[in-house]
Image (cartoon, rainbow, N blue to C red; front, side, top):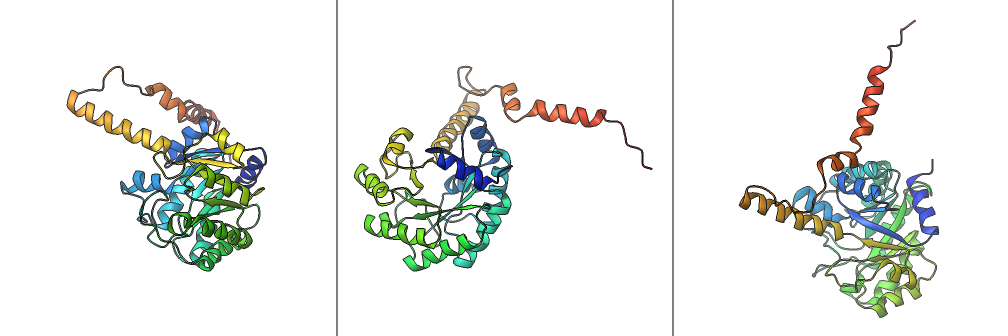
Length: 295
C-alpha cells in the first residue's frame, strides 16, 4: 500500500486537487466519504473547534500533532495535508514537528514564515521572520524525512507584510531549501494569482480560497486554468457548521425544539456515515469465533 505522501504525490500528477478544510475526525471522515482526493487540516478550524479560540497561535504543537493523528486516521486512505503553522519554533522545532506529523500519518506538512505568535493568513497585523531564517526552517523540515514519508508545503505571508516581489523571492528560496509544494498566501487580485502561476510554472502551487478573504474567490476550474495544483477551501464547511450550530442552539433554547423544516442529517444516516453497521458486523463476527485451544 502506498504511503500517504506517495498517494498525495500521485494525486498531484493527475491534476488539480480540491482539498476541503477539516478540523476534527468527524469532518475529516465526512469529507473523505464525500469523495475528497485530499483533506486539509486547518489550523484556523482546529483553534476554533478544539479551544473555542481564534487562530492567533494559541494551539500547542502537541495539540496539533494529536489532532493530525485523529484526522489522518478518520480520512484514511485519503491523504491529509496538515497545517504546521510556523513550525512552533526555530528550525529544530520545525524538524521535530515534521517527524511527528509523519508519524501521525499526515501526507504533507505546511510550514509558514510568520513570527510567533502567528495569525490566520487573512487577518491583519501579521509579521514574518527574515527570509534566511524561514528558508532554514524549510530546509530542516525537508531533511527530517525520507522522500516517501511526508511532503513539505512551504508558505509565505510576505505579500501582506512586504510585497508580491518579496513573496516570490521567498518562494524561490523555499524551493531551493527542499520544499515540494509552494503556497504564496493571499494574492490580492487576479493579476497577482497569474503572476504567481507564471513565476513558478511546473511547481505544485496552492491557492487558498477563504470566504471574505483577501484573495479573489475563484472556482477550482478557474484555478486549474491558471496553473494551480491544489485548491484549499479551508473554512468553507467550518463557517457553514458554525452558523448551523448557532441557529440550532438558538432555536432549541427559544422554541424548546428544532423546527421541522430545518435541514439536518438523519439519525440513521449519521450512524451509517460513521460506519456503525460495519463495526457491529465486525463485533458480531469476532464474538462468533470459537476459542482456540492452547496446546
